[in-house]
Length: 188
Image 1 (cartoon, one colour):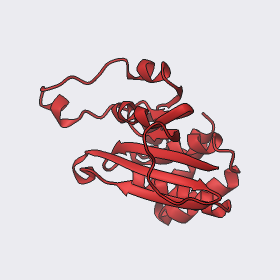
Image 2 (image 1 turned 90 degrees about the vertical axis):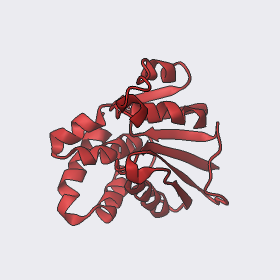
Image 3 (image 1 turned 60 degrees about the vertical axis):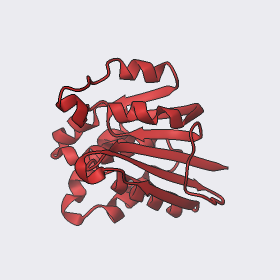
Image 4 (image 1 turned 180 degrees about the vertical axis):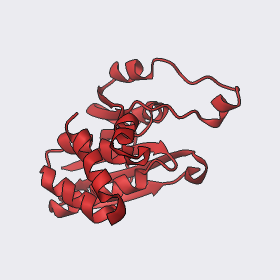
């Protein structure tokens, strides 16, 4: 059996670090893992998608629509865009943050309303104000690790393995902050 996780966000939110942490955890848990990063316009605040697949044997890193067990969404609009990946019985973990895309900023479009409700009609959803929590622990950039904490709680993999992966993948000068962010997310 293979578990499929799709990570969606906006460039600069730490989706790639999140995929490295997840990859470290599942390797440590004894699984074969494949990670594929689709950067898009990540350097300009555009959409970023990362695929993480793990199991006894994984042949391809790509996850097709309707095949994700979990979508980890770092922003609400990206969650809506990632909804097509969720399989029947899958779930989506959403940071309730809103980042205005350029068409909204320029007035050419409106930010969609009712995103959480739309998603909740289609699959199981777990929401977290990860950005607010990250600010409370000291830095909004730790929102990704707050979401990793939420994912960890729902993963079936021991919490200690997740903490070790955070320690391995986060620079030492940000470690305490990120461990606090992880703990807050885990306890949501």
